[in-house]
Length: 206
Ligand SMILES: Nc1ncnc2c1ncn2[C@@H]1O[C@H](COP(=O)(O)OP(=O)(O)OP(=O)(O)O)[C@@H](O)[C@H]1O
Image 1 (cartoon, rainbow, N blue to C red):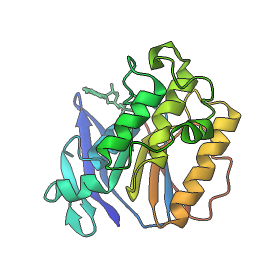
Image 2 (cartoon, rainbow, N blue to C red):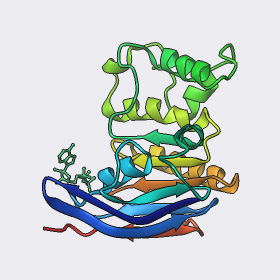
Image 3 (cartoon, protein in one colour):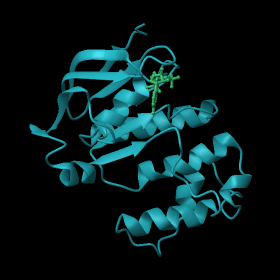
């Protein structure tokens, strides 16, 4: 499904990683580990096609993502550090917008979806007035609103409480069972036992 071939990244004359190789198949989850500054976000951004590697290439279904980016992008859901949520809008308005751009029926009842993420009573408040964890919950509603096969998630558990972390991992299980694949960074251990979990660790290189 996804192959990282011989990928090198250099930032400010520091080589973050060199000739990195790994692959991810459908049904698999991969945790990218490593200390602050090791290059995890840089790698995720390259894999999502937002930045070019200094060397190497990323393949999706055997083709370079840089040569078939539109097809790859249609299969990708990237949720990064910045939540991608419009802070001026309410949670409900954000979700209605995502539904529209993903071609879903935007007249459906959105309240149950927000309730799933523990946002009952907060649906109509501008997102900027929510806590960091609540804002992240709004951002993560997107995991229920698309058919992307590959999820690339940078620190998805940040600011979530225990129940949020658990709920998110249940969603991961569903996605993997539907032949999806997940690549994520997290500084905390996953609490769900995933049978198809792989870990890649980036060391901090000086
Ligand atoms: N846009 C940029 N321009 C220059 N240097 C950058 C840029 N983005 C990141 N870096 C540098 O690249 C290195 C790796 O950063 P990156 O964010 O990929 O690390 P990380 O492993 O995700 O860290 P963390 O665990 O703290 O999120 C850091 O030393 C950082 O200063």
